[in-house]
Image 1: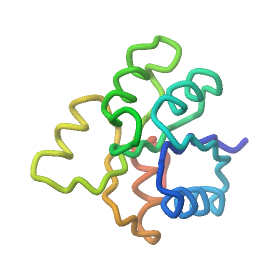
Image 2 (image 1 turned 120 degrees about the horizontal axis):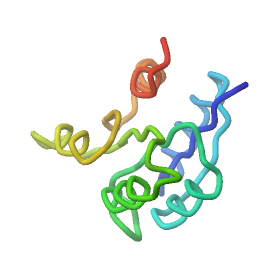
Image 3 (image 1 turned 90 degrees about the vertical axis):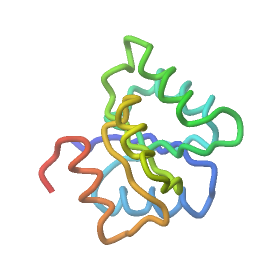
Image 4 (image 1 turned 30 degrees about the vertical axis):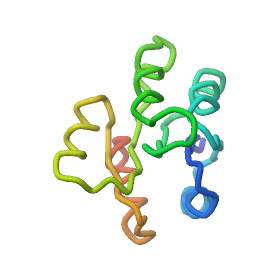
Length: 124
């Protein structure tokens, strides 16, 4: 049975790239183009893991993270931050806030599936 990923990403090119890579590796994908829709879909669909853009048009990714983590039904879903924030301390801050992994943009298609599998506890 394939695992389902919820991709919360407002940039169409990034959404296409991430979903293509996941689907190529046998994952089913759900899409959310905004933070609020992402929170809604996480609760309704209960995906196996979430790839979360930190810069979203409506609410910050950190708020999406907080809302998903505070709901008992979705609190344990692994979440991977996908961000172009590459400031010192950002990775640690996001991991401390509850992310299970951290992927920097631009996404490296050669490395990203290994980064995802590591974050969700699958053997690469």
